[in-house]
Image (cartoon, rainbow, N blue to C red; front, side, top):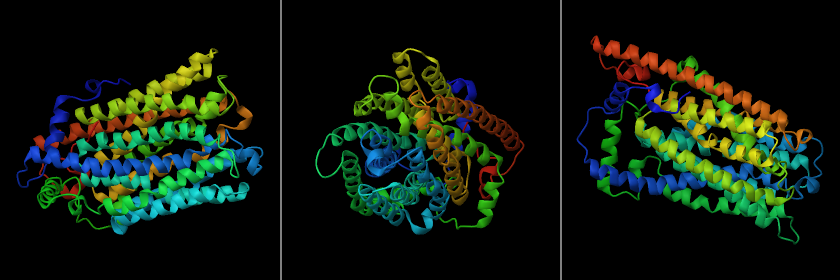
Length: 482
């Protein structure tokens, strides 16, 4: 699949989208609009990024803990470490669609603040577990409480920004995840060298849990339930955002009420299932690489000590830069599939390098190549669904469901990258190659569906079909992003 936007879309598709996102409403000062959006970015995106960074770090730091005395201190045997790694997703995936559907009902401020309180407390508590059973209990609770952070903050973006503004903002949020992974390696390296009453892994969980707890008051005071209610905006800025919401009512109607019919209708949409299965393949590679990267790099032959944690840092730097570039150009050209499919193709090459190359240096380079696909694909796939599914509760459930299916891959990864397959982890790498190839095919299928349906919609509009926003994305005047 080509990574060039021009290969998969054309100019008339792009023009229609611009008109499609603007409903009738009062005229907006676009200079003032850009200024207030920058202010919202500084306030909201930085908070969401910090929440994402710490939640991801607290969930994935078990990979760094493994390189300390963690498994010995807890008496883990066989594949108990893999089981503990995977069990967090048992509750994580179940609660994702629940939290996204309830976000508007509970309200973002309460849901995200309560979630942060609970997951930071569980992380602190993990520092004092004594055995496998206690570790599993903490991981199960961690999954339930963290499940609301990423999908709900992503959904909040769709409630605040226009369709061609989602990804560039989510790019920043996901970049915090890359920072967290690199920072986690540095933090783990430093804390693992502390000697005293607590082991290095205990300091790791304790310090990261306390860092997460510091975000609680920030989330409570700075996240508004609706951006039009933000205390850090002036009355004039709040009025401008209300005008934007009115203009964008076709995409997001804040007055929409929950109905089970909306949930049933999206479950009948074939696009949901294709996107969800594709996300399973995408997240399989995300979690296998982020969780097992320290062990994978140690197995390359560079080192078998905690120094392997330091070698993960530049990998995540590449992942962050590549995602920032893809996110920027995806919004600029208003297309998703070329960047998802192109990144997956690059990632596929990287996994083949890791698996097949005999030279250590080439395999390490392969880790860098695979990192290009890590965050670009995971973020864009979910937001592509948000672009093309109209109705808040249809969109909310779809985003949660796609991440529910995708993140369930985390439950598999711990049983595929097993201790028995170390140090090359060939079984896991074969799995990642297969999952990546599957996601490439499904991404093309989604692009083809959107392309053909857009063509039919253009024919209907040309024949005089009326604008019917009540039909949601079935409205002939609602153009899909490609």
